[in-house]
Image (cartoon, rainbow, N blue to C red):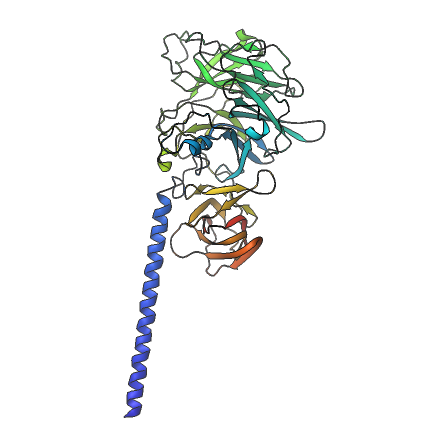
Length: 510
């Protein structure tokens, strides 16, 4: 009888333990399910890109505008006005009146979808004599010292245009003049706002600069667009300042050199098109982008109006109506246009006029210099090369984030690290190529107390791997991946948290 009671007790205990185990498993599964459902919902509510296939805007954690771009060593580098600096000063209820902007934003990509944030160019520190920094334009040239030199021109408020130089696309930058390169003290610069510079170097290695804006003298030909040849040093002027008779010119001068021809683009005004002498060319849309061409750019009569080729983003229903500023450029044999739209205002809870840079692929007939109408979209450009997850990737390289992710500068110029918070944040990288090999480990260079959970494909289920850090010094940690993933191209999501936690770079290992 005693053995029967013992056996019955043992069976009951086993059954009870089994019940507890099943209940715990169900509870953990429920917690995991709720956690992941909430995680997806949380991130979807604060990012327009994290759960979509959209490539625009390029950066979704800050406001940027007035872009320029240049190709260098297999990457395209984009520079922009830092609208976010104004937003940080005035808050969600404030207006973007630009007066607090004294930095420029740097970013780059090798695939047009995953963008590396290189931080800010602090013009207030570099050129303390200047007022503001808006609307950059960049070019580069291999010089006699064997180095590629970068020349970055920008609007010093509305009073002139300044220039910075560097031998790296991400700096450090220098102010070589200590004054504007063009302003109203220069003969021929008889416009109210000699700003919004556009630079190009022609096939002879000669630099050219366009600029202008301010109160128009007439509506049809406002008489406030200008061009000048630059000196051999790219920081002096080597010709008289000439006029460009741009119909309904407003601002946002830009310059290209295509097939032996200067191509001038600009933002048209908001004025009614009451005069229009071209019977074979439609009137330009309001606050859109038009272009003109010339073989002899210092001769005003040589400029020929060609067409309107990019409408206002409000016209294309990509955010509300705003001003317009573009740059036409090539990257890996294709033409693109960089521009800005008000993509992110709703996600930041503001209506203050804060802008973000986007990019679209363009078709350009180089032989006949015809540029068909482009169109602003949320979708943006296609990914032109896959991301290699088996080489070191920077934490500041993202295709989307959980919202207002924070980065800080560290070490060399242009190097940033991701900063943790007490709350979870997320970084998305698109088009990671696992089609040939399956990873066995994940590693990251980290510091502080925090955690990184790694997901692939989406944010559902349990993490592929988790990395925990608790140290005051930079260290590289790795963890084995405990479940198999398919050989395919997928998105990668890094969910991280930790108030004093930062991480610099990551990669998967075979």
